[in-house]
Length: 273
Image 1 (spheres, rainbow, N blue to C red):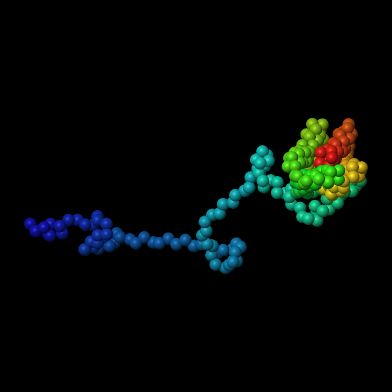
Image 2 (image 1 turned 90 degrees about the horizontal axis):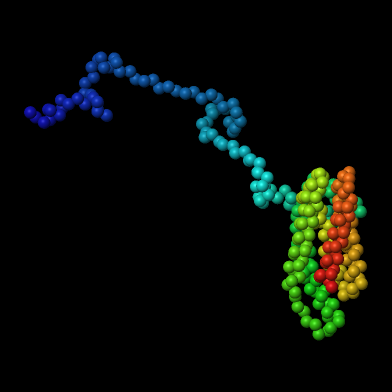
């Protein structure tokens, strides 16, 4: 038997891509071409470049991520949660600085109620630290030079450590202590507003540091007592107006006044002896 004839007799209709050589009439009748189903897209009636003209385009679905409110403890350690307290411009800071030099109004909390800031708190305390450490060294040198002409200039780095510990510690711990004490007594207090007010209360000591360079002890004491009284009155009047209506808190206001005076005396005794 011829091999070619044996291969040609094999059925090939089941093979993929094979084309039968002869299609009879019955197969033609049974074979139907499937109709193509077309999908008509409705006109585009939404917004877009072709408003109402043309057809909708198929686009990948977009996901909308809702920003979840941060957890309270997460917000404490998140830098972004503090950006709102630095949203001030130069005019606002200058206006608040001027208010701190005129303590008789007692309306500082009403002025910062909509937007209390921490920028002034940080800027004022940092400036005061550098001024006390540098001018304290210079004032000590002037006093020694006044009594002994052979005295040579020397910078005591310990002034920087004391100034940073004293000013930063006072500006952070004292408002924090008053905040927790008022919360304990049932008064609705704001820690950020306390930090803001106490920070601006220290601004008067910045120009005072210039005047304390005068090598006259009597004038130095007069200058620091006047500056301390003005700063203490600023804290006293504003704190009293803030807790107005709360009974039995007069001693707290007096304590805030005395603490501010104690800070002024500390500046004079330690940095300008």
